[in-house]
Amino acid sequence: MSRIAFIGLGNMGGPMAGNLLQAGHEVTVFDLVPEAVATLTDAGAKSADSAVAAAAGAEVVITMLPAGHHVRSVYMDGGGLLDNVSDDTLLVDCSTIAAEDARAVAEAARERGIAFVDAPVSGGVAGAKAGTLTFICGGDAQAVENARPVLEVMGKAVFHAGPSGAGQVGKMCNNMLLAVLMIGTSEALNLAEAHGLDPAVLSEVMKASSGSNWALQVYNPYPGVMEGAPASNGYRPGFMVDLMAKDLGLAMNMATATGTATPLGSVARNLYTTHSTHGNGQRDFSSILQFLKGGDFE
Ligand code: NAD
Image (cartoon, rainbow, N blue to C red; front, side):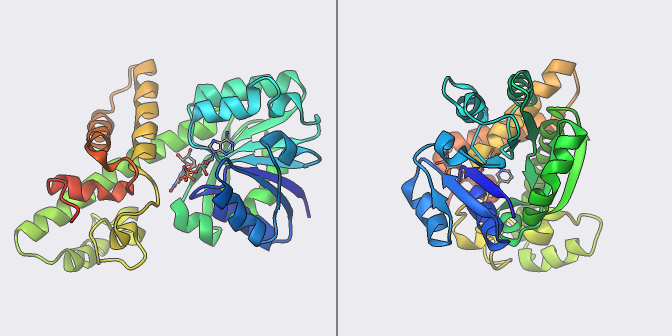
C-alpha cells in the first residue's frame, strides 16, 4: 500500500481519492473547501493544512485542480510542492491543462530530479466514482509505469501517450470531439421533439444506429431520458460548462499554434462560451440542449 497525497477534491478528485482509500492506501488530502475535505476524512483520509503539508512523506502526490494557473501555483510558486518534496516522490497531475503548462511543471521538476507525469482523465464523474476512468499520460516511460498501479485503482485504462504534455494533447483532442458529439446529439434530439418524435424513442433508435456515441450511451442530454444523467438532475454537474469552455479554448490555442483546421471545434467553443455568458457556466455541459431551445431551464 502506498502513502498518497491527494490535492483537489472536487467533482472528480473527491471520488478518485475515495477509491484510493477503499483500496487500502494511506491517503492525506487537501482542498480549499472544508466540506470537500470533510467528505474524505469521514471516509478515513487524513487531512492537512496545505498542499505541501499533505505531501510530506508521501510516495505519490496526485493533483486534480481546475486549470493551469492552479496547477502552476500549487507546484511552482515559491514554497510550493517542487521546493518541498523529496526527489523520490512521484508527482501526478490529473487536471486538464495546457500542454505547455504541463511541460513547464515537468521541466521544473526534472531540474530538481523529481518525476512528474501529466495524466488527465476521461470518463466523467460517473467514471471517477466507479473507478473506470481512462488516464492519458505524458512523461518518462518509467515514471508512467511507476504511476500505473495507483492509477489502475481509479481507472480501467492507462495509456502512455508520449513525452511530457502528450497526455494533455490527447485529452484536448478527445474533449473537442466530445463537445461536438454533445452538441450534435442535442440538435438531433431537439429536432426530433420539434417534429413530434419522443426524444427517449429516438435515443434508443440512434443507440442502435450509425449516430450512436458516448453522449447517447451514458450521458443523454434530454431531461428524464436517462436516470442518473445530469440532464435528469437539473443539469447539476457532472462536468461544468465553464470547464468544457476552458478545454475548447485550449484546443483552439493548439489549432492556432499549428495552423490546423478545426471548424467544428471552433463553433463548439463559441456555443459553450456564449452558453456560459448567459449565466450557465456552473451547469453541466449537457445543458447545451437547453441553449438550443432558447435557454429556458424552468
Ligand atoms: P471542481 O471545480 O469540481 O474541483 C476542483 C477542486 O480543486 C475544488 O474542490 C477546488 O476547491 C480545488 N482547488 C482549487 N484550487 C486549489 C488549491 N490551490 N489547492 C487545493 N485545492 C484547490 O472540478 P472537477 O470537475 O473536479 O475537475 C477537475 C479537473 O478535471 C479540471 O481540470 C477538469 O477540466 C478535469 N476533468 C473534469 C471532468 C468532469 O467530468 N468533471 C472530467 C474529466 C476531466
